Length: 597
Image 1: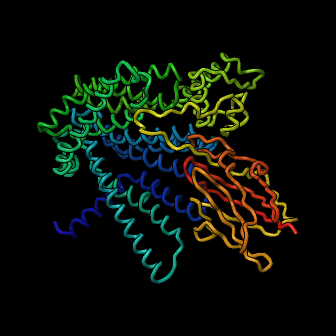
Image 2: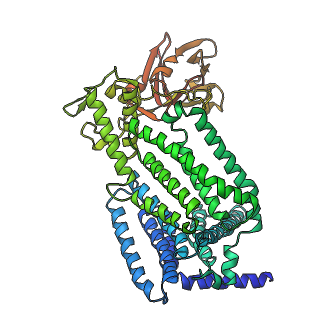
Image 3: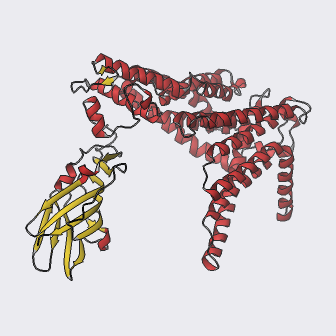
């Protein structure tokens, strides 16, 4: 087939996709326009964009349902499309009356989009043979990959054209690049992707050439999966089992090391299983026999470990999802081993568990919030730290109770629920405030794990509180010098440590002398003598070093320092400071010089 014929066939498929998925195309075009409008007006339209995307995805699901289950696919979807509109309007109202950037809202929206996308892949396999879902999975996998590749090339090409025009002929507003991105990913990508989705036959024996080609595994992918991906997954599984065996009587039961790896491991494993399900070679057959029982063993042991962790530190949304993945992995492994013909139930099981995780009152965030609130209150009450809805600091807490308090505090802060508790009036405590409220340092429990090799350098960020205006008393000042320091050098002095200033035709040198371990001072010199040498090592002790990267806000009076010398008085205002052990400090300063007459 010539290039012209291929192009004509592709354009025909795109036009057919417009008539076939007209409902979704309308919403994806509306999404593209909304994104462009938001870019141009710098308006936050996140709620509108998400709602339009959800309506477009639901439109794809409705079309596939009608083709799969009904004999007259044109009439039935009208009612289903109406329900999609009602659901989309309802979800928009939910987003409108809640904080769109609330943690709970973000989790629910992400899971909802995941459920819709998984349903789109699952629908064509309903009431079909045992390989139906694997073939459907392959169709969508190839369609997404090809559409992504074409869209990426298109976007980079348009970027190159616009960039060349802007550089060589006439400058163009940089917003054009954002508009190109919106057009590419919300417009072209969705249309091209839909044009690659074939009609799914109700019986595999009736499949046309287009479907067979789309559902087949390319030779390149078959080699990649059989001889690279599968050996890597098996080796990875054996490493996990080896770790478990070595630590089965020790730290394994109290160590959550596997938890962040479990989700990616399960996803990668099932992803591979679905892609190779229709293949037949020795490597594939071995993997099909080995992986499900190995996965069953790993997830079973990890489930027991996670359960112990839940009892010690309560439930969080992350542990809630780990529990669901343990359930999913266990049941899906059994299905694959003993009821392979029911393999299409596996994505259905994942959809059901995902829906449960976002239902009100039993969703992951709500359960996590309730668990951590109860744990915090129980720990404070047990240690006599609650009195008239006020927390009384306690310096004699056990290490276990300190860890429970920190765990609950971190989680409740993350989900924006901390300030809703009667004994908190804010959702954020600095390191200093945390120590004053609870009686111990928030990061005092941080330890080096065997796999970290060495402890991270301790550091602290300090910023001047912007709510308190900085009052500069310049009534007696002769020179006002703003300067910044980075890695022992003054930025305004072209990255040297010596800045030259002039006062009454007299030149002075302001020198920043710093050694990460021994000294830190600012020196003022004239052409003959040293007028002042101000020891600034106290800057490293304004706030106690910790291992976090949070910013500590201090009032201006805590960041104002003065020292009087024989010939001059130096007043230093610190507006930003970063201190890390065994490293030169970084910061922004104002320096007032008052010469003594």
